[in-house]
Image (cartoon, rainbow, N blue to C red; front, side, top):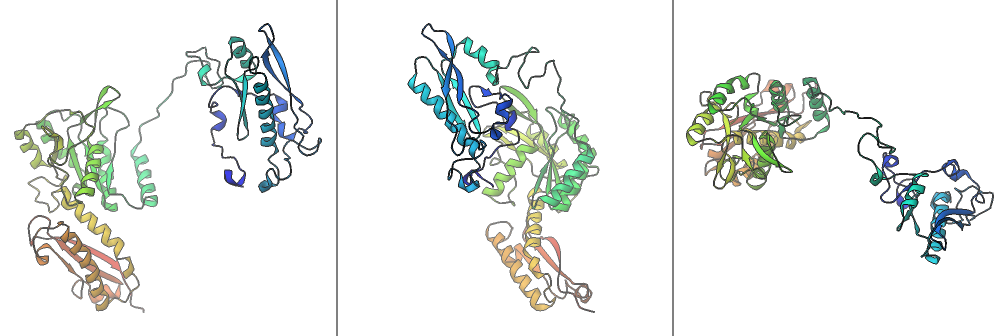
Length: 465
């Protein structure tokens, strides 16, 4: 029996530990704990406090009639038709509703001397007083569990969930490389698609996990994703950053990663904190991707960082002119806001002459690879010959032409902007025998007719032997 519509009760795993929404919650004596197993004639009176003529507190005995079937039936048995959907076994809620009505009827008849009101939430009966004095509270605490408002501060608290002596909590240990490797495995198995990865530190401020960048960039390469890195806190000057970037590149898949410098200043409830820039850059990239496309560099006056109040260090044009050619992306303050002023990968040093020097070129290639990989699954088990190749050229060409029309490539003509090749030259007879079809896709991200080429291989029909 599932759902409240079917007569069920939706109770969370921690509901027993959660204080009542208001007032006091009954801490049941033994008879009430076994309420459902009592006979319906077991309870005939409910006793609550009321005031006598002199203003003193005296018991008020409120008669209740809980017999809805037979006097000897159990409380859980409900009247015929009350809860037919579960076999009329919702008698506990039925009986508690009768108690609630009896209490509220008595209060309505005696509003000047009786101040208790009852409400029912599922199987929880809550009895509260709107005009309780100190005596009411003292008497109530003898039989009720105090709500949050009655908890005491310090070491002398007596609440149910208060530890009797000071106890220092522990935040645990920082995640290790093994923990991250385990997380990568989970992501690979359970996350269908992601394209940006950041590794925020476990506290603020903290040194970025420099020993994690290498494995993280390798994982990004495997998943066609891109790693955004925070600059080390020891980069306190542009000179230190320039000298230290080569050490940061060690072990990296450089064309799948980028570093952003310096750290950013945020307002955390009045406190000014320094945090790594990777999170803000990830949000910026998502915004640029949605507004302009993945081929647009997430930099320039359009690339302002929002909800940021400052940067750790300000850089001049001269300093930026030193940092940028080394593949360090700076975040700068301009009259129009705090903006990202760099779009280079860690392979973007001018001395490297990499075709994936720039972030938008690398991310556009990754976007195309992922899209074509997913969009060409239909070729599996198709006959690997010219009709298949022609259909592949048509489908991939349509995808590339759509990107061309959106301005993803340079050039005014298709032949200068992109090409798609899938024929007997890309797929040899040996490839056919092995069940492979090879596709070459080239695009011109920077200059017309200067192509970055992507090689894609799919499994097609294999010759039977």
